[in-house]
Image (cartoon, rainbow, N blue to C red; front, side, top):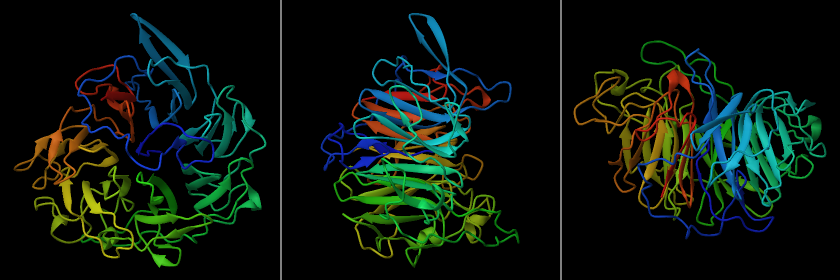
Length: 457
C-alpha cells in the first residue's frame, strides 16, 4: 500500500505515529523544496527486470531511525557499490540504510504480498499487513508483528485478519488497521474494514467504531454497470500540523452514520475517533465503471491548510467528460487541491490538474511542491484523453505541481511501468516506490532505479 507521508525525527514512545513515522507537533522541519532532479545512485532496487512477464513491486517505503523499510511483492533485491552488484533473497519485505543504501540482514520472509508496514516509535517492531499466510515459516494471516532486529514473528501479538490488510498506522498505543477484513484476531474485533488494535497484544481496543458499509453501484452513460468493488479501507494520510486529523480513502458509502464516498476525515480524539463534518460532494461523482474506487491517495500541505488528492478513474461515468474528445471534467485521473478547514460540509476544489485519462496513485507535498505519481504520460492536459491535447505537457511517471494553482513546476520524469504506488518525504528528500513492469528502471532520466527512487533535497 501506497501511503505518502512526511517524516520527521523520531520522538519518545507513545508519540503520534504515522505508519511508524513519528510526527512532531508542527511541520517546522519541512524543507522548502523542490527536491533535486538527480536521483541518488546508492540505493537498492528490485533484482528482476520484468522482461519475462513477472512483475514485482515495492508497494510502500517507511523510514524509522536510520533504516528504510520496504514492502511489496518481490523475491530479490540488489545493490551496486564500487562496481560490484550484490543480490539478496528477500520475500516481500526488507530494510536498508536510508543514507548509504546498505541492505540489512532483516528478513521476515513473508509468503505473500505485503501492502503496508508500520514501525513502533522505538523502531523495534514492524507491523506488516497484506495478503499472506506465513511469516518466517510460522502461521500469520494477513497481519503480523515482527522484530526489526531478528525478523522473527512476535507471537504475543495476535496475527489473523479475515481479509487482506491494506493500511496500517501506529497512533500512540493504537494500531489503526484497514482493509477488506470483517474480523481481526477472531472475535477480538467486531469492527469491519477498520479497527484499532492494541500495539502489544493485537486485541481490539475500541478506539475506532465507525460501522463502515456500502460500495459503488451505478450505470454509466453507455449502459455499463460498475464492476464488483468490495467495501474496504485502502489508504491513510495523517495531518502534519498537530491537529490529529486523518484522511481515510476506500470503498464505502456510509461511515459513522453519515454518507461518505471515496474519502472521509477522522478527528483522532484522546479516547476515540469520530468522523469530521469536512467533506466534498465532488467525491460522490462516479468515474468509469472499470474503476469505481478512484480516490487513491491524499497528502497534506505542511501547514495543514490544504489537502491534495491523486486519482484514477479514467473518465466521468456521465456528463460531458464521458466523451473522450471533450475537455476533461470532474476529478477522474487528476490531481486536485481542497481547503482542509475542519467542519466544512461542502468543500470545492481550488484547482485541478488533469493527466489526460492516465491514472495517478500517490502524492506527497512540501512547502513548494505537490508531488504526484502514477503511470501517467502527461500533465496539465485537460483537452486530451489518451492523447496529448492542446496545452498539455509530456510528464511521464511523476511530476511536481504548484500548491497555489496546480501548474506543472517540476518535471524530472520517471519510467511509467504499473505506476508510482507510494511517495514519502523525509528531511533528506522524496522517496518513490514503484515496480519493474516493462523493464521500468528509470527515474529522472537515469537507469538502475527499479522499484525505488530517491530524489534528495
